[in-house]
Length: 214
Length: 214
DNA sequence: GTCTATATCCCGATAGAC
DNA sequence: GTCTATCGGGATATAGAC
Image (cartoon, rainbow over all chains, first blue to last red):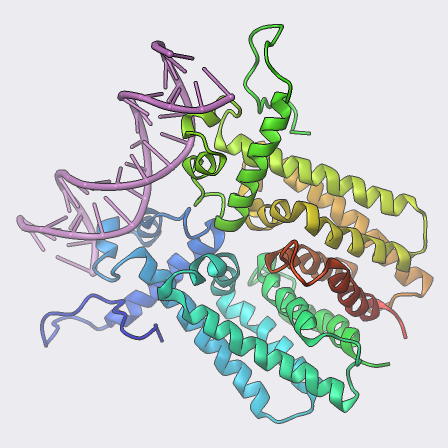
């Protein structure tokens, strides 16, 4: 969900709406998907609201019926993505397996999210640092800290259990792994001949072997 | 060097120049360093020529005495960086050591370049894809192909020699390693307490162990 | 080599008709 | 829910004085 207090959608004025069939939420999601692809490909600043409207087949002014601002669009995209990621990480950890399997699970779920959330990951990677400086996007820092704790906890447990080498620095290895899995969407093409399962297999082999004791 | 045919600097009109002492090249390098830091921190599109001029203590119009355009600045920054990187990779390979040592050398020289070229690496990573689509920056694709060949050649030799696992896919492992080493400048801070040698040590341990046969 | 002053363009966003 | 029309602002770049 979007950060508290924000209104992404303009307030609706009447109580009964005549037409829907497809609700406003559906239309909003369509427009957000278009915006996300453009933000990911060209960058947030370089993408104009006219670009987004063009792609949607409407005029730029019409976008403001659905969203308060360009900023609220990227806000919605990022907060939704972070929610999903946090939830998928929690699910992996809740399985209660050993450090090695949990580490594998985190790598796997991160890479798997490329298929559905490729644009959001790219936006998170490319625009995150810049946005995190603004109060409206302070939740980015919060999510970042949760992620770091989850990953480093698993790494530390693996060292303690003897499965991982005791020479690894959990914080640095976390950064390596995080940067690795979140950067793959730069060249991964959904629907291409290179399947996610192959990428996951190769990445798991290098990363798991890279931290394990032999 | 900049790509052929471009004139980054305005043509000088006279034959004898009265003043230099510190040549124009020095002043240009100063301004480029300022621009590179801003491009890296805020993004190329979000950085205005006024930002650069402010930081240099002059007015925006004055910048155009030194450079044709904002675009020629990023061009100069990127082409210089790619030249240096290519040259450092060639030096490592020319040592003629085994696949493992050569692989280590490539990782090491990439990470070491963070200290001197942090901004350029960030710009290359963040703006490269967008720029490569323009004819002026087609040399980015050329450099990219050379880098890929160098890295994958080393990986293939390691597989052949038996030092690296024969299950690795050189192209995919190359992408993992490349993304890993070029993403570290996102969080590395020159002059901070986290020394490059420590990062290099941890990264080498994971990556070399991750590809090696045990 | 820098400043003054400005041309030209395009951005995000708004008001109100339909 | 989209279009018409437009605002106010800020962008890159230029011409010429100093």
